[in-house]
Image (cartoon, rainbow, N blue to C red):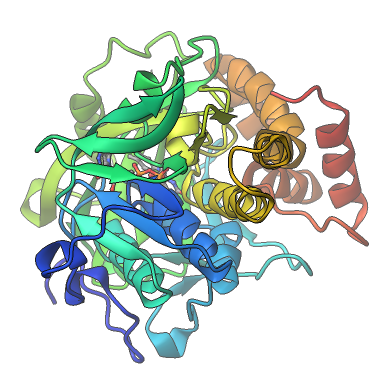
Length: 443
Ligand SMILES: Cc1cc2nc3c(=O)[nH]c(=O)nc-3n(C[C@H](O)[C@H](O)[C@H](O)COP(=O)(O)OP(=O)(O)OC[C@H]3O[C@@H](n4cnc5c(N)ncnc54)[C@H](O)[C@@H]3O)c2cc1C
């Protein structure tokens, strides 16, 4: 099978299989909402807005299917968002499920941590190449009535009285709507043009990844390495960063490593060389070698803990990486982008009914950052502290040596890192995590 293909039983709608109206005679340029960027954040925002009866223009600079540098891992949080969107994530629809995390650290044998059994979240994760996943999400949004224009590279906002009223692309084409969403990823040209600067004090990560054809592609666990070594663990030099290997349904494994800006090596490391050094220590039968590598080692940034604010002002909402919404505990950004998209759609539809431009509509739009903060603010604050602590390799080594062998402690850590607890009627661990998140001042 060609890399990137997933066999789907009941094939979902794909953006790449549908004609964008940009290819047709009528080229819509006005809507209730414009969403810039058709990654998971943008497509989810657009889909949730369409579900609420709004007309939506989704503008994407590339063509589907397109590559996106990512680990391709979907935790139960992200799976829940697929369900909320109405996308079938059952195995009969062709998705490959995994049952949890296999964690390496502190000793040769790994620890297996199944996804928790909860009322609020499913107990399985998925791994799907972003070339496919983003195509599915954008296609689903189109099925719900969203107009997707691909090949539209948005370069600037159109403003009136300091408020965004549309966008212009690099061909000078104009698109107008009273509310605009920047879901254009970490570099977010649109948010920058509207004056939203990045807060350098917030946590930030960098990660690289590639694919290998490997017998481990059939695995049922998402694997992660809390410590990397250039030889035998504990008997060689410890390398900076954390690694992962996520088995895909297409016979390959997505393998990568990441580093946080709390590490002293951040910003002056050759990440590709680091990855090669680490992979040379993996067992030869895993085939994480040049002969079995599929595609370049490619990297990108992970903006965390709301590193760009405010998430709403002057008619523009930020969703996903544009607003720095990656979870600092585990580098997960897909679910957070999609969840933000749903919260944004709530605020936008409320503003639309009240009459955009009225004080009531503005109050509804300002409720979006409040909703984000109340859902993730305290948790991200805890994550910011965590990032500072594990920036010190000795602290991480202590945790892996003494913490990992304690099953109930690791169960707690697993729930904390993946942000998987029941809000009501959870167990004592859920209660502890929820209370800490509530008490922490929002990030
Ligand atoms: C190496 C790596 C591994 C990762 N692994 C995982 C993982 O396993 N699981 C996980 O949950 N998260 C992971 N993440 C984080 C995750 O990839 C992001 O958080 C997620 O993609 C954010 O989605 P988004 O929709 O906000 O932005 P993006 O996915 O970046 O989408 C932005 C979209 O906007 C488009 N765009 C950009 N500029 C313009 C413009 N000017 N005009 C029009 N369109 C534009 C882009 O083409 C793109 O389609 C990883 C990140 C990296 C770097």
